[in-house]
Structure formats: structure tokens, C-alpha cells
Image (cartoon, rainbow, N blue to C red; front, side, top):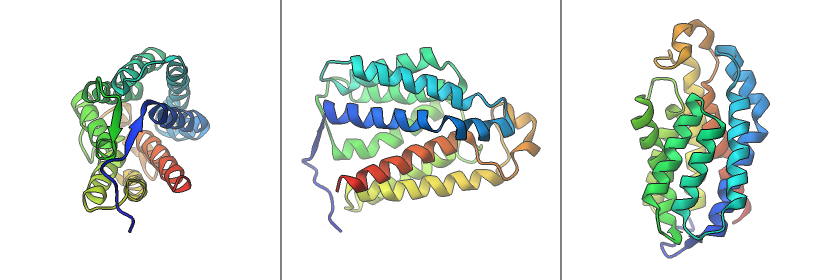
Length: 219
């Protein structure tokens, strides 16, 4: 077990690159997200997320500063404008929280990177008033956040912690197939959700798995 180096710093170039990678991952999965969402709703999740991801990528390319917090805040505003849907609003809340926490920092430490899923989850809970077990993105994101934090705090490398988090996200996403929806439009037709994963949880797993694969390649 390699462990982590508390002195490793991630500069704005690396942060932009990773954020852009996540946005492109989401955009590339438009059809999968549409298919899942059409089984329980109107199927607009894929379209909405591609529009939001495209706006985020454009904002990243435009940003020329050195403040990660400012970058996250600008991306949040771009996403909110391009994808004013339920999921877009929740993701915007997560990005805004990151913008506030990391404001005026030129670099981020590994420990701060490991906290990002937790920050995101808390912001989504505050904004959406949902909790674990309600059949939402949180059912993949919260286990992911907890697993990453536990692995990192136990001394595992950031790449190892992200891999553990991705598996936790996958497990959480699979569990949503048997959950009864308690929020959102799907709660009005719970019979349509049987054996179908929550679209937001799938979205979380896609990003988590992509980050795990990318971290493994960079070892």
C-alpha cells in the first residue's frame, strides 16, 4: 500500500483538466442516461446533462485565473443557466459549495480533494431536502464519499481511495433498483422504477468509475 503524501498539491491546470474530464464523461453518456430516465420519467436527463456539461467545458476553457474556487463558481453558474433541471440545480449547488470552500486557494491538497464528494453530498442534501434511501443521486454519492474518506484517512493513496469510492458508488447505484422513490416525479409512479436504477445514481457512478480508471492510468 503506497499511502498518500499530504504535501502533494493540485494546481489550477490539473483541476481544470479533471473537471473537464468529468464533464465530458457525463456528455458521452447522454444516450444511457436518456434510456434510464425514459423508463421512469420523460427521458430528458441525458439531454439536460449534455447541455450542462457542454456549458461547463466552455467555461473551463474560458477561465484564465488561478483560483479553483472561482472556477467552480463560474462552472456552477454556467451549468445552472444551460441545464435548469432538477439534476442541474443539484449539481450547481455542489459546485457552488466547492466554490465557497476553495475560494482564493491557488492549490488544493490531497486531503481537500478527498473531501470533495462529501462537500457535494452535503450541498445536495441541503438544496434538495433528500436523504440516503430516498432513491436519488445521494444513494450512490454518500457511500462514495464515506468510502473515499475512510480509505484516505486510513492511509491509502488518493487513487486507491477513489477506486474504493467508485465501487461503493456502484453498489449504492445497484441498490436503488429496489428502492421506492420518495422524492421527484418518479414517486407518483413507483411501479415504473422496479429493477431500474436511479438516473442520478447512475450519473454518480459513471463519474466515479471514470475517475477511478483515470487515477489508475496516472499511477
